[in-house]
Image (tube, rainbow, N blue to C red):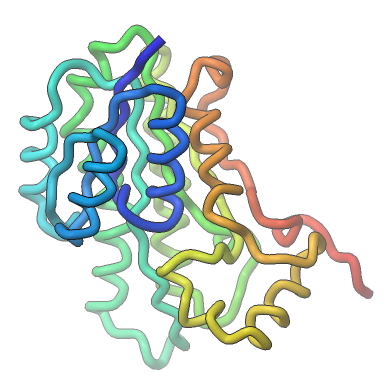
Length: 241
């Protein structure tokens, strides 16, 4: 059965991988991203409709809601930042921007699209957190704080929107995407980071997208309010003394 999904951040990384999975399954897509040329190319390839804009612009969410035609079976909010700085080097503007992109944007995306989500018989929302929320890492204060807010939002909306709309979040560890290229492009650095994971490799965008596609679909119809780690074991396991 064909469904319609809205993906914020659908032109790169995990969002693009998710879009490709859902398109391959025959679903309709509406993609949102700020890189117009890339977004238009991906949307054209997948036969998707799209909206160009930044989630830092609050007007974007209303625009997207107006442009999506019909009901929405699911929404995935994938935009992110990787602002890794020691506390002494973070400014109020850094904290505010990370919160705006990760947490406030997620809330506004669902708020604007809620009427369309409620038109579906059973809709699903997927957010993205981080292994860094529950497994503390140095220089992650701003990102982990914002992602912690995403986890709180996930639980609150899962309770508020039940039973019509399910809400879950995925908490990845370091995943090779354009966003993380500063950490993963160097082969030796990437290998060292991979060794910190029990499964001895970094994540791939499709590792995360596969779970996101599952959570959006009917097979996950009895799952809501969950924060699920896709982290190579890093969030829970220690394989060395």
